Image 1 (spheres, helix red, strand yellow):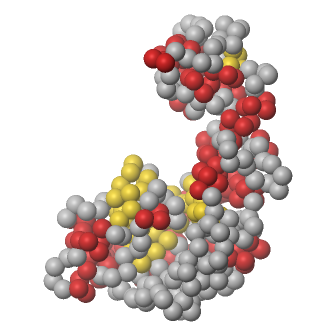
Image 2 (cartoon, helix red, strand yellow; image 1 turned 45 degrees about the horizontal axis):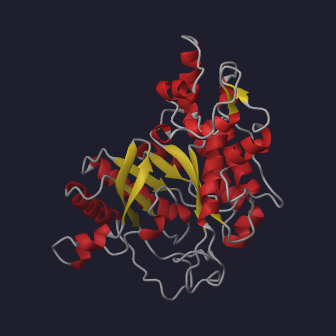
Image 3 (tube, one colour; image 1 turned 120 degrees about the horizontal axis):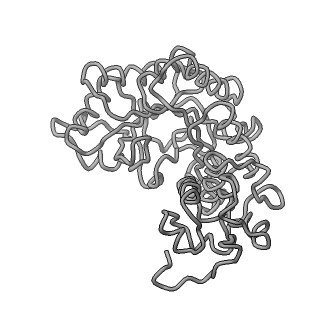
Length: 373
């Protein structure tokens, strides 16, 4: 998952401090804390697993079946709930992300994940942030209960197509085990008030997946199934796995995917608007919004006083808040200078300058030093 900027710097809790003696081992816990972006802001979150044993053989995963160097541990729901309560009350964390390896099928493990949070919510009266992983093959009622208990649930597709998933994780079924759970989650959210939003994650760059594939599916999930966010996890090789000799994915590719994904989700863009190249990937040297603007707006700049909201959102440096501020300011008077845009709250004035008209004229692209962002 990449719900946090420190994904590679943290690992899930795989040794319960309670098993190491009566004193809580804070050093062990701190290695399992990630600072993640949640629906209510950034939080320190404990990343924990019910078990590190797994019957699946995902080719990129450190917990895959048959990997001899993985330390296998399994915890009871009571143990996990007790440890989390200790570290939460000590002020170390303000949320939990609970996942697991899979033993005896996804439904069996899903029960243990749900039981852990039931104990936290009921026995320990915990009201804070919870993010739960939905296991492949989880049952409808398990998903429904998880969405009632958690603030966020992850149903990770991992690959953008059945073929890509099979190349990553040959024992997982894209349609029946995973995508069907996303459909169920959408049905549940439509029928009743539940606590959780729904996210997914893709492993990027290990099996020839293209940005076009990833973003086309992301767009479908945003528009048709109410997905809150797609996460793009750049592949990083793990020793003693079938993919250990593959090159890591360039972090810039991950960044460009996020930028393009936000354009689809928040800026009213269509997949066809994105500036793909060649085999269907985005440029790494420039963000997709600027690449599109260079091709379409450099020689046909947008008149800020006349453009509608959708058009304003095509301009680099202008986001949803900036577009709304411009529309509001236009009702009160003219915007004829870059300083006027800055005054109404447009923060990307320098980035916008090459692609707009103010008072029918192009503004200077090079701002005075005191006025630059």
